[in-house]
Image (cartoon, rainbow, N blue to C red; front, side, top):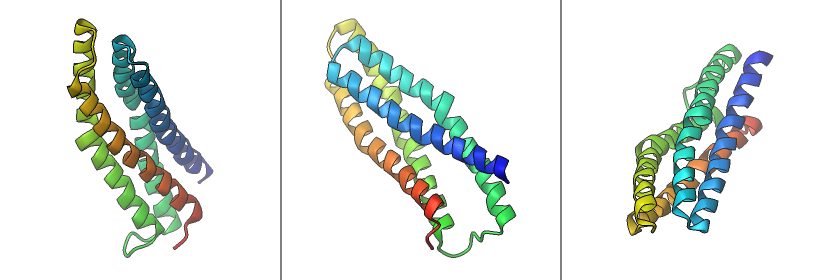
Amino acid sequence: MHFWLFVHVLGAVLLVGNIVTAAFWKLRADWQGQPVVIHSAAKNVMMADAVFTLPGIFMIIVSGSLMAEKAGYSLSGWNWLTLSLFLFTVTGIIWAAVLLPLQRSMIRHSRLALESGTISAAYRRASAAWAVFGTAATLLPVAVLYLMIAKGF
């Protein structure tokens, strides 16, 4: 059980750590306003998702499922576990349906900025939407992290 708890916590660290860190570097790049820096940050956010976020999600799902089954937690009714799973699912939907397409758009528009030397309005719109939806997709896993620790109801 300790091994799976370690895997679960490591997955949470990878997931939450990456989404907070990626947002920091992407916002910092945008504030600098240099197309080469912005393009690099946009590409690296996507790469960090592949290297850290996806493995973190996989580790959380596998270890969490095994520990919940072993502990006999019920997935029927409304409790801390079902709320956590719901919020985690909503986060995944936001990430897959909104954030990934926005990230691809930011990469595409920032590549064009390398050629023109200016950041386009299209990039700025995609970046602003990414900030809004990214904030939600960051706060939801933090709430799940709290629920996993508190197991309040």
